[in-house]
Each structure stands twice: as C-alpha cells, then as structure tokens.
Length: 249
Image (cartoon, rainbow, N blue to C red; front, side, top):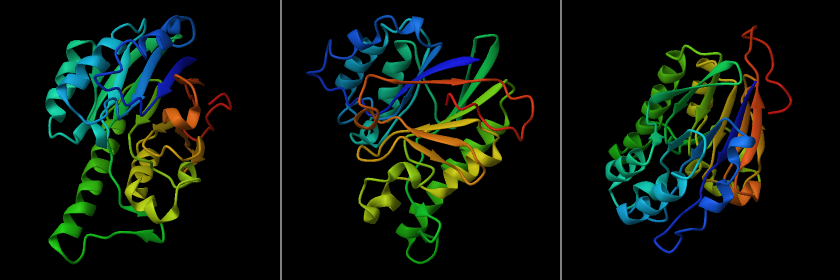
C-alpha cells in the first residue's frame, strides 16, 4: 500500500511566501509522496517559481509535479522547472519518477497534457494549420504519457497531468469550455499504459471523481475542488492487471 497526497492549482505568486509551507507540516505522517498537478505559479514567472520552490522544499516527503498552463504563460517553463528542480521538486514532462514506500514501488508518469475535447465533441487534425497543430499537440503529449507509463517497472502506476483525461471530473464547469480543459487522448493513454490512478487539476469548478472507459479512477485534485491543502489516496500493488483499484482511491 502506498499513500499519495495530491493537489493542483496552488497558484503561488510573489506575495504567497509562507502561505503553503505550513499546510505541509506533518505531511510525512499522512503520505509517502506529494504529487502536484500543475499550476504551481500564477503567471509562470521565475520569481513565482522561487516562491513555490521555497514552499514545497519544506515537504518531508518526495514532491513530484507537472507544470500547468499558468506555469507556461510567461514562456519561462524551462526556467520554472529548473528552479523547482533545484529545490528537490521532480518535474515531469513525458518522463517518470519512482518512489519506494509502503513495501512497494510507485511509478509516476507525467505530462502537462492539453485540450481537444471528448468523444462526440472533440477537435480533429483537419483543416487550418492552427487547428491541426492544436490537436496534434494533444496527440503528441498523450503519446508521451502512454510511452512513459508503459516503460515503468513498478508495482503501482499513476498518471499525473494538468489537463483532464475524462469529462466526468469537469462536471460543474461550462460544457462549452470542456475542449479547453482536457482530451480523451489522455484517457486512452491512461488505459493503454496500465495506470491504476490518474490525477489532474486545471478545472477549478469541476468535480473530484471520475473514471476512464477502461475503469481507471480519475481524480481532479485542483485545490478549489478538493477544498484543502491536499487530498489523500491509498493504492495497493495490483497482482491481476484486470483487477479494480481499491476503493480507498
């Protein structure tokens, strides 16, 4: 059994110093790893990343993150990731991280993800170059997630994204903006890659719980959704690949 603390959309700015670190006090008694589902900053500035890094560096357990759209806003995503990395936060983009705890090995595969929509209401890579580029980017990052998941050698696989893989966890948001909040290509990657849990953020007005077509639990851990510093989930090693994930997720 491995214990996961997860949150997204903490949106720390230069005026947020000292606001999140206190929330992490004692987290080691509750969880084995902290996963952050993007939007660590307000506008993706290095100065904001320095604040986020300082807050997360106080964590007693490993911190693994993906960036979100806010973290890309100032075109300094690489610099933001580097600042976080220097503080010990492992930032994933088409890559993986391993954590050993609770007698098992957790593998986390992460990408930011992108929009595109869901079955019956999605974009396609046809027509104008801009539209083709939009959808192809979604397909590319989703393929990266699948490859990362499939390459993991571990007991438990978790997919970490910023954008949503299913529409279930968007319930509460305006349906018109669903195509900008996530994509079914991410869900296909989650299922094909054998994940046991998918975590995302981005949809502040959404719903916590959902599920992929393949039965993988999906959790929207955007801070406005969970209403606390982080949500807690427990996942057991799965001996039978077809078995369901424990209800504690």
